[in-house]
Length: 450
Image (cartoon, rainbow, N blue to C red):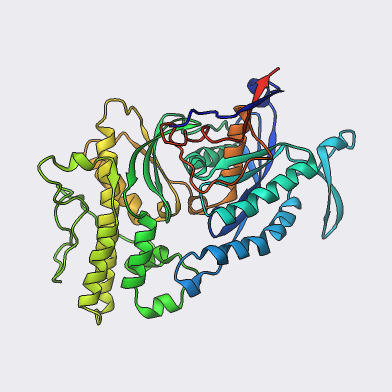
């Protein structure tokens, strides 16, 4: 394991308490995968925040049936500059002309305006597809140099974990309250097309991984199952490659679906729906764990087996009608989500885990069936006191607003990123990881309070 805070440069900066009494404005860039996103966020002295701009453009990967690295890279190069240009139009107006060093001139549709200069520029430094990351990191560095302000390169997964704190600050800004919720520690389920992990978020930079996938991410598995289950007409009409979202819509077409869900008595039993008339069942992961029992795999998720089973069911019945496909879609998601819940229950049994909040973030967190299953299983197993926090759908998928907020929290903690820092394809959030976690990589600069 590498020591954290490796090769840290130090310089003087105002104290953290002073920073938290002032506003902080940042422009942020997210390009870790196939979404090009830019945001402008300002945090106020009472911990509330205002989101002035948050837009994204997703590369068209439909011809490839999934995210294509080259297509994503090309899309970032084509669209990032125009998004940044639009974001500049949303920067707050600089009212005073006496402090021109804190202003930038922005040319817009209605002429030239004097805008507040961001305090620093934030970008996703990793983890992700390196070519895509480089586009965002290099653009952010260029802006930081041009404006003569610091650069902040942050961890993408840390951004997902902190998203509920962003939402709390935004809500506080609307209601005139103070926002800093949830407070550490809390549990975080990071569920997306690239990640599946259960994390004990203990502080800003300490996110201990309690369970991680051993093969594929839940979002990737659901997307692949969707391509097998969905009728061809659904796939042909797709506007993007977020097939998991299509699968949810196909399985529960009603606007306010009644999921009619009952938690299982055992997570090892084959699953099907009530009064199912079909000749197939789906086995949950680790349904035959051996003499040591399921706890042996309490720190593991596995989803490849579910995907393989679904493919075989479809291959045996290629002419399956839409009604049966709809049932298969529901059972597939049910088994996948129950597997997530089972690891949450294992974690809550550990004496060291003293939390009252479970945050669910990442693209899969927008699934309404997942919310129903987690709540029902927690309640049925004596955890009604655990609060479930799901960010709004627009903040579940990759977005620059969460990157902006992460940058602000890291900036307040005294961290900056060197202009020599490079994009990182793999970057853990657990300080016990081989790379030392968030603070274990090189390129950090630690500010010394005056």
